[in-house]
Image (cartoon, rainbow, N blue to C red; front, side, top):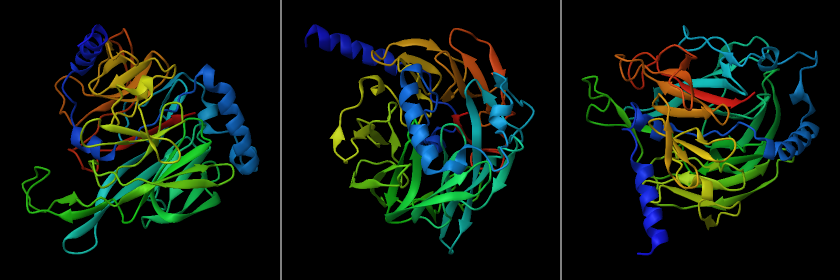
Length: 395
């Protein structure tokens, strides 16, 4: 083994010496969808070009007919917190990142032994600044700027993607697809969508004969062990045009295993059940190596790489050098959810002595033990109505 190999292995060992995984890890692995929505100065010109193209294609998305101002623009405070609210009722934000929506889960029985896991969304109303329930959509992702959402209709997989105006509440345009889609995610600049295709609904649940949630009842459901995923589309938002790539990967953990964009938006990736744990693809579906600054990311941790591309936030609040994997800091909290800037993170955090399931949103700063409480604590245990999953976007 040469010197370079010894150094590399040593750095890798340091990167893996992290705190134990936080509560709710299994549920996060099942449902995690990473978002990297904070812009950097280096990418500002490219993002501006994409926004101009998008505005030309969908002119209504910039403002309403009455010129109403977005709620996320009306309040320019650096931190907008509601530590007494869980689930949140009013806008929560920090820096250039806001809580765009959140959802809860419930199982809807279809037969005696089968159910479907349904997300119930609360979207930020850009007129009122309040989160309001919507029952129209089975899946939602929010574009940077929080003017537009990509939405999928109730019965999955579906063969069209809607572009929802978050100020008017109307679908401005539908993008048809030839293969069934059950997951969708915007690129970091909002100019593209990656849509994951499935041959069956990946949220189907089947009754099991054991107590999986610890409530003392053998009436629980588990995901299908069949893998219904078939591949992905990469779609240009402005034109609605894109291409589909078949991906038949056996080393996949969940029935739902959606694709997402890399930090720079030039590749897509998927989580895997075993090493290397993440697989990257170019837009034609060919396997490629991990980007240099994403070698230490975890696909189930939403925050990922910092805006400047130099840091990685991992489960347990560990902050690593993105290129070397060296652990350089720890921030209080369990699960990093979003980078606010290159020094601040939004995380799930459990107060000392609290139930491990009763985490709350907090804002933490690298190098400081001070926390800003952004929301109230979750209630109940995993899967309970008091548990909710946040969706962050650039405001």
